[in-house]
Length: 377
Ligand code: FDA
Image 1: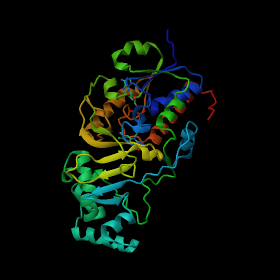
Image 2: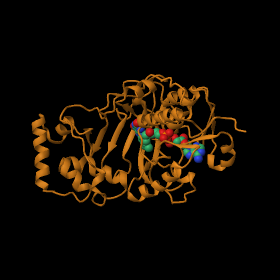
Image 3: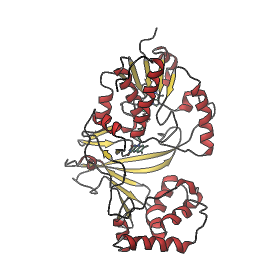
Image 4: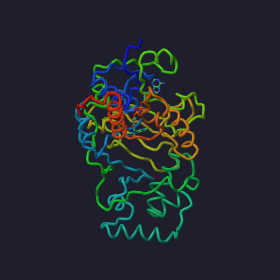
């Protein structure tokens, strides 16, 4: 005898949105998560009265008004605009590459001057067919931007020399000939006022959530609780790694509390020199214009992934894509399991994309199972 309509494995944005929508349609859901908190990677930990983005900086941005209205129906968002900085040899540059960056590099003042400078540098290199990431980047932005702002950062991120990385990793490098430091081009962006946990709490309001429980430790028992499962964990683990392990890049975070009000004056500062082991420092209070007496910063170190580390970025190369395809074929044959989210689909999703994907899967699912049910959205 089953007790719930849906067992939802994982309380990240995919699981939470699915649970919310199913609950809204009168279905009984049980959400389980192996971590001690809900929210997956958007979870914030309160330290010094500051919302610390525990699994990496999260800035919400989207062009989709429906998704923006959806998240704002749970929590109001602030006007935070992502304008990261880059530090290279004691100089501070604005990102994304724009007229402020070019002024700092070359004292160029007009768009024509900056374009001419970049054009000269590219022309001088004579690269016709870029053979690797280094040549690709050089052929797009020239020597100075590449050497100072791309090379070291990229090599740290991937743990390999830029000359050993394939050219296709960098398709374009956005170069902006205006004095606009807003990183994202999307129409809407911001941070939930009071932090991401408010969004997750709103989504999971009225839904039973059990924390600190791993689906795989008691699989048969969990399966008995509901006829349908929404699975947002790792797809290779779901199938006992029978086709092999899918690979990831990982990150390592070091949080520090500083006894001062303001450490770096900006939420995100990248460190682009190769010899500095971290790629960036996040100062969390600036996401919410915090005025607390202390501050919390996080140094972000890229790292190789091993089974005991958090899987952060899927490595979507040919080898892993082949392995994923095999798992996907098994998943397609399942009648009672829906796979969704970044781990089950082995795909990098931004928050707005994972919410969009969950909303679409819910809609399709209910159209299939309850065709007469008129969607209330
Ligand atoms: P998520 O990983 O959040 O949730 C899965 C949940 O399932 C986890 O809570 C996990 O514990 C649980 N689980 C797994 N296996 C289980 C098991 N066996 N039993 C029980 N529970 C299990 N996006 C954006 O829009 N703006 C940004 O600035 C950023 N920044 C960013 C930085 C970094 C470093 C990363 C890695 C990612 C981002 N993102 C982002 C992307 C964002 O984190 C992502 O879109 C969502 O967190 C994905 O939500 P999911 O629900 O798919 O996975």
